[in-house]
Image (cartoon, rainbow, N blue to C red; front, side, top):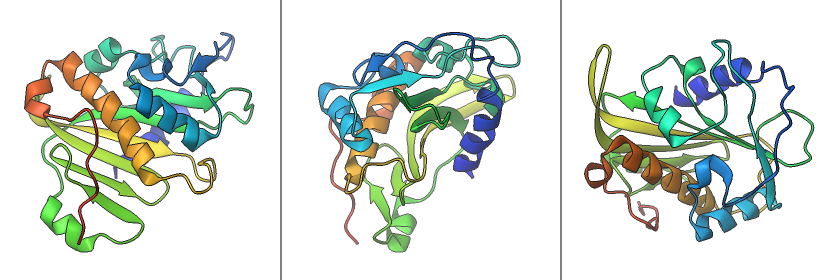
Length: 212
């Protein structure tokens, strides 16, 4: 469901005019400089490179596509194609396919950790992190955290953070915990921006996945 919103957003966000030159970033500079040194290294291991670019230009409404925590928090309740997501590309890759996409949206609830642990397998890992966290194969990484926010149509008690990994771009043998570490760092920073860091209680270092 949530990976679908990422894929849906890909179509719209890739329609920028492309006239703005993309600056090359280090791993510690991506996603509004939210990654810790260890998570920056995780990104480098996943990508087999230490140079990246991000989505630039504007969307259909004329809003900047460049990711910032402030803008992402402000647009949290907008439609998926109007939200501010972090699109990471490998520098020099001219295919136009993002390496990672990280986005946020308000959520009314979250999957049951206990139930999902029973369904977990070698391709699906559940982490005792936030309200619910999982890595699903080589594509989806999801993290729900407690964060009371209010939008035009009411309040939401949680925020969902999702990370989409483009198929075939992850370095062979890369560990799944690298992806969760990256998502957790960006989610922690978003919780700070939204004023719910204490409520979210996301740790600086991720724990081991739950064993069945």
